[in-house]
Image (cartoon, rainbow, N blue to C red):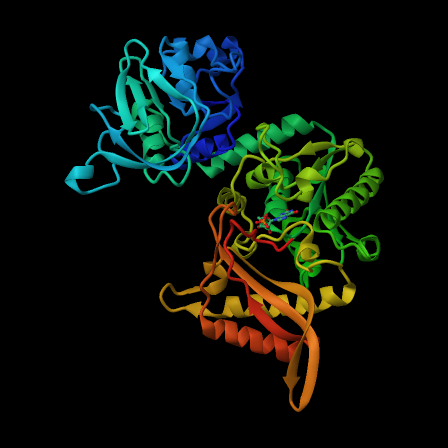
Length: 524
Ligand code: XMP
């Protein structure tokens, strides 16, 4: 197993992700764990993450001595490289401007880490790598025993290695997808250099997660908000696997669900998984509180707060409920500024991370907090959830509340639900001849958005003056960045025709051609 020491970078989880991709088990721990902890953990390799800090200014932020004495390979990334240099007798040059973005590094000398890993076929770029850099300070002098492994014009020491001790370090970030060979590099490190077998799978993750949940929860009861989305469903299945009927799922109908959602969720969970599910119809309560509210962040906060109220009321009905479980996944944590990184800014308050009050009175159980979406899906499949459910597009907790722009009204929600169902049906029914897959499967998330704007139209001989619906379909692997999907015109045409003809009250349909960033996936 691999130990990742976190110095507070926003992308530390991506390191874990790449290590798991190489089928190797790893855990992330804070950089200031004790020497005893490291000896007890007995890692086969250690990776030191990046950080926003400066080795120059933060004298506290160092790797424990045991890292260097453990006798196992160590890989320093960015700040991890700098602290390696400083702690082993090299030096770091302070800089007040950051180098940020794409760079090409040249590999020097033959090192096991980089040998044969390259991006270019041409002789003049032989041995060069496309990488993503984000740093201010840089290593100025190699520690004794180290040789130069990589350089760029602006960063002469962009990589260093002491192969006798198995110490490697790179200034760039191999964990991000903008470094195309990063996955190969991390795989080389954990598999070939550290000798990890590569036999870890999602199945083993289930065993570990189940054991951990049992240990955390003991004989107390857990209450979970089931939204019908992939994340909360997978969390429910995982926790149900761990503690059976100690789990009570609460499915709250906030009046902002998709068409037939309630029935589908109840059939699947109560009917198939035999999990205990309470169906609460709180639509009047939610819509009442939301009346007249137009600000997106306030809407999210209100929905989050109402959820908590419903949960608390349901929890009180149980005798021993001490836990609130949620399907929070890693991108939610990052985007709500919930990582340790001080500088991370809040983009949106995803209600399942940002909106919980201190007075909740329940402890939080978030077993998916470290996973990315595709890993959550793999977990769902491994747990035996039906593929139809697991490969469903994600649906946000606040539901149609973030897809009705501005004030939410029941009439708007009813129109949107019907338009959305038509769009999804057409996506499912339209097969792309090139891949043989439906456009639902070819997109990561697709939905309709209600725009409370009226425009003029003509139907038959009459003039209409009705609302607009925007269709959004995106392709993404991690939901942190996304491209709008190039849906066939014929599909858009049929969908728009059906919506305008079948949903009285909508007379115009548009397609959203904005990528994320700068737009987000949801409109609010
Ligand atoms: P954005 O709009 O931030 O969305 O690009 C990224 C992904 O997160 C989903 N999303 C949410 N999920 N609670 C959730 O459980 C929320 O409050 C929330 N807001 C956005 C969104 O649907 C997309 O998949």
